Structures are given as structure tokens and as C-alpha cells.
Image: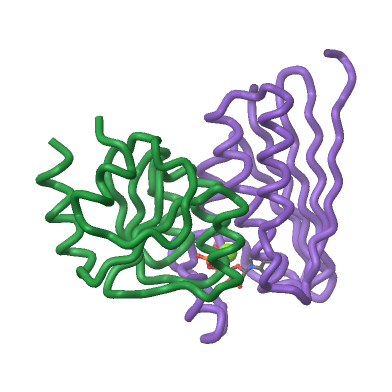
Length: 110
Length: 140
Ligand SMILES: Nc1ncnc2c1ncn2[C@@H]1O[C@H](COP(=O)(O)OP(=O)(O)OP(=O)(O)O)[C@@H](O)[C@H]1O
Ligand SMILES: [Mg+2]
């Protein structure tokens, strides 16, 4: 089992909001439609998305995903970032596409 | 525990940025009460979907959570436009959400189906021009 922090280091992702990064993750969910994410993402997943509005913080909290990874260089407004930090939601960003992130995760996850 | 534990929330229809706060708060309270993580997850997601729907589609509303010994009731009430065809609204993919809401990631037409999926029973009463009431129960 790999922790969120180890995973982020291996993939050279940039931390934006730091929550419980000692948490281990299990599986990946990719999606931008929030109700799909709420219906399908599992607790402990890494959630890959390009959505950056304030609602992703609540969705991550309620689905109990291990962290959010923002693809394609997406970043957060300062108010979203501080809300995420207050709620203890870990968020990273990377220039990689969702596909490239998932492919990289598939090799580190084994 | 024979006493019913009650929570009441006002859901502000004007403030989209704070939408979802009641559900996040409820999740915290359920954890303090020692409810199992699986039930907490189901209830708080269903409540979030209902809360967002009240903000997007009904201009706000109210949420009540009643915790009994063997089940939890989640009751959502609004005085919005109502739902003309409940059967249609319950279908995955049906949505009347406007474009500005869709650009935020809502409007997939999955909210009501999620409420059904995560609750043990759901009852929807709605009257066009008067409002909507959704009652969900969760077995403990
Ligand atoms: N409280 C409500 N008042 C009036 N209409 C509602 C209410 N809740 C849902 N609806 C109607 O039912 C439709 C389906 O709701 P549902 O939550 O499944 O999808 P959505 O809100 O459009 O998108 P999503 O939940 O996936 O973001 C809505 O588009 C809306 O027309
Ligand atoms: Mg909805």
C-alpha cells in the first residue's frame, strides 16, 4: 500500500492543499461530472479531474477519496485552496493528462 | 438510546459557494455519534445531492435529519417550482440544469438516482408551483 505523499513524489506532482498525506490510497476514479463522481468513486480512491470550483472540496470530503489530482495543469483559486486546506482535503496538480496520470498510477500501484 | 436525535438545517438558495455545507456538517455530527462510516457516506452524499438540488432548482429549502434507534430519516422540503414528472426526473441523465450550472460539473442528471441508490427507501412528493418534499430512510 502506497501513501498519497509517496505517490505524489513518484509522479512529481505539485501539492496545492495538504491534508492527511500519510493516508494510503486504493484505486482511481476519473471524472468531472460531480454526481457521477458521487455515485461511482470509492472511499480511498485517487480522484482525477479538471474541475476546480469550490464544490470539488465537498465532493472529496463526502466521497472520502484519498486525494484529488488536477490534470492538465489546472490550478485553484485561493479561496478554494484555503477551504480545501481547512477541510483537510489533499489536492495536487500536474501537467499530465488524466490518461497519463492513470497510466503512471497503474505502474506505481502494483 | 431511546430518544430521537434531531438536526435541522436551512439551505440558502442565494449562496451557491456555500452549497453543501449542511451535508458536510451532518457528516461530522454523524461521526461524533458513532454511526458506521458506510451509513455516514451514504447519507451525507444523498443529503448533498438533495441540498444542491434545492439550491440549483428550488431557490433553497430546509433539511431535517432524525436519528432513531434502528434507522435515520432525511427529510428535504422546498417551496420551489416542483417537479412535473417525477418518473422522468428520476431517470439517469435527465436534467434541466442551465449551462452556467453545468460548467461547474452539475447537471449530469445523476443526483436523484444517487439519492435512490444510497438510501434504503425514498419517497418524493411534489406539486408544480408549490414545492417538493423528499423523504429518505437509512437502516442502521
Ligand atoms: N428540489 C427540486 N425542485 C425542482 N426540481 C427539481 C428538484 N430536484 C430535482 N429537480 C428536477 O429533476 C431533475 C433531475 O435532478 P437530478 O438531481 O437527478 O439531476 P440534476 O440536478 O439536473 O444534475 P446532477 O444532480 O447530476 O448535478 C433536475 O434537473 C430538475 O429538473
Ligand atoms: Mg442534482
